[in-house]
Image (tube, rainbow, N blue to C red; front, side, top):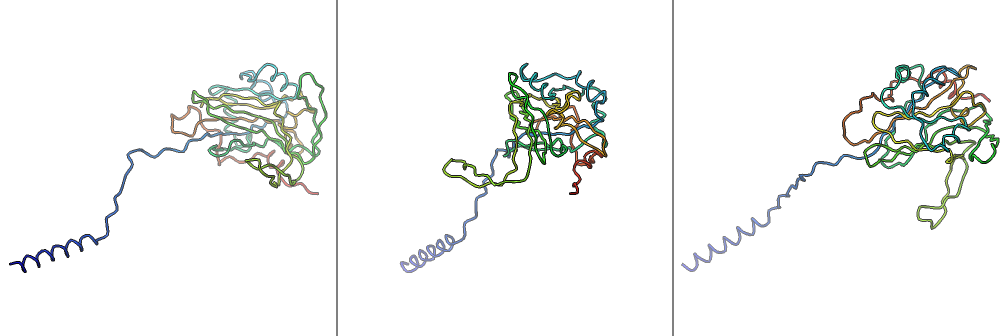
Length: 286
């Protein structure tokens, strides 16, 4: 009997060892928390073009807008031929018609801001050399600026406001010349690093900020009576020897899921560049 009991005990031990050697089945852990959407901001932009001194684009449109910025900033912008204002809602019917026109719009863009902080929206490539009078201080005198191979644009830096709207900082900038090598300090300031950059003139004194809801438009343009100003350089284009006037239109919203805005998007890949754009961007023969 003892022998039979010992054999039974050894068989149980052997069986237990075999079962213990089996590979363990991995445990699948599923999170009950839904995936978090990537947060960010979306800025849409497009440029409207019309002949110089067009009655609507140069005058009537701006009577429907709300100027932004401090009074001193508005005066300084006016001295430089620049206009910055907002429209809430659909605005005039003519404005909506121009926004959806293939022949009267230029360079629609949609930019998502998740890691990037800002971007520059190109507005024009003025004749070479680019000359304009610049005033950055109401108490100072205008100075003549002359830049070669100039490319004008507006730096846009959006930030989310506490009420869910988007604050958009806009600043005129002009790139000029060829790329050059510059030494810049690294992020922690421990050493200098070499960068190939295009020289840029940044006019932060002429910058301003607008707070936009999902159904608001930001307009940046030029007064055609203010010739030889920064505004004239930034918002004119040439099409077969015929000058065209431009207005930059911007909308901004959060990329997080939310109710769709009442207004249609202003940017789309289906739009074709206008005749003026093709003339301005075509390579020049030396």
